[in-house]
Amino acid sequence: MDNIPSPLVNMPSPSARRAGDEHTMSVLVVSESSLEQTNGVSGSVRHVLRRFAARGFDARVISPEPAPEGGCDGFPVDTTPAWPIQNFNVAVPTKTSVIRLIRQLPRPDVIHVAAPISKLGHAALIAGEEMGVPTVAIYQTDVAQYARRFAREALDGVVDGVMPKHTGWLRKISRAAGEGAEQIVAARIARMHNMATLTLAPTTQAAHRLETFGVDPQLIRPWGRGVDSQLFTPLRRQRDEVHRLRERWSRGGSLPVVGYVGRLAPEKQVERLAVLDGLGMQLVVVGGGPCEDGLRRLLPNAVFTGMLHGDDLADAYAALDVFVHTGAEETFGQTIQEAMASALPVVAPAAGGPLDLVDDGRTGLLFDPADDDDLRSRVERLVEDAALRRAMGSSGLEAVKGRTWPALVDQLIDYYRLAAELRMARSA
Image (tube, rainbow, N blue to C red; front, side):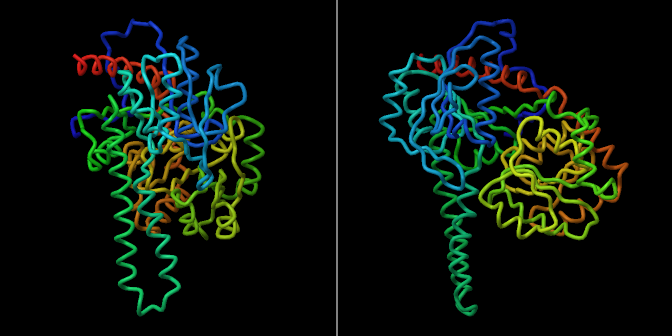
């Protein structure tokens, strides 16, 4: 995979020779996330559909329930039964019912499968194979790494209640259980993505990860994520709403404002922000999720805004001085791009997606993902140096120019056409 360029560079499209080909397509989008929820999968699907509408494409969506009333961007949405896990609606249909539904719908030119992991995504890939329709699978969430951590934490919780002299061997079992859970999920991810005509990975790190799972490198192509540069922009700092936020959060301009934006879920590791206590800054936590109550107790001096969207979210970014990303299990890190578009310096772990997104020392600072003290020292450096904050923020803003959603979705459409060609070649 070393010969695959970063998906975050302005790459030529995979079908540049067809740059002038504007014929429309019919796309069936199968999303593992309900479009009524706020997360990276549903957000990406919404941006894709918006661009389809602008280009006159025909599209339809299948996702876990619930669905937005009246569809999404003018496109109909069919739903499957779902079960809530960690505030995430996981699809729980039978594969037969999904395949039957896809066969009953108008035949698409391509099936777009967003983050396949459940029976829903699996069934969509099976249907594509049986119908001879090319499938493009989007790798977006490292569920294998989540499984590793959840399994270990579950067993560690049991071990913590045992007398210390008996815990050594139990800890070993906990580690083995985590590794076993990761291997099981990794094998499932590989099985699904190897069924797809093409798999799109958001970063070089994610592509390497897929290879370690057993995904055929020949099936993997780079595709990043766009950022709404009209919504997330440093120009928002001129707004009265942002002035009021900043006045309140900075205590009249006396403190730098350090913020986190994202879901408050175990995999985001937001509890690590406790190490920043005493740095002479105001911590702001933007988002909601299953860990919110515990985090409010852990971070009593932080400002919690709850979940924000649209202008309110963009205003929150604009009122910050430093953006901190804590999770070391990200395949991408969309909030990092939003922070950079808002001209904020970024502090993030040197792992996963941030390695492709953050130019260490230029657009932000990377910290050792296993060292909370290193996280503290990187934030402290930026809290104490306003000039460095401005320089890194300016460099970050320059780095994300051109990463618009229309440009990224146009590249995705070129990948659809490449998948159709590959499907035809394999059939021949």
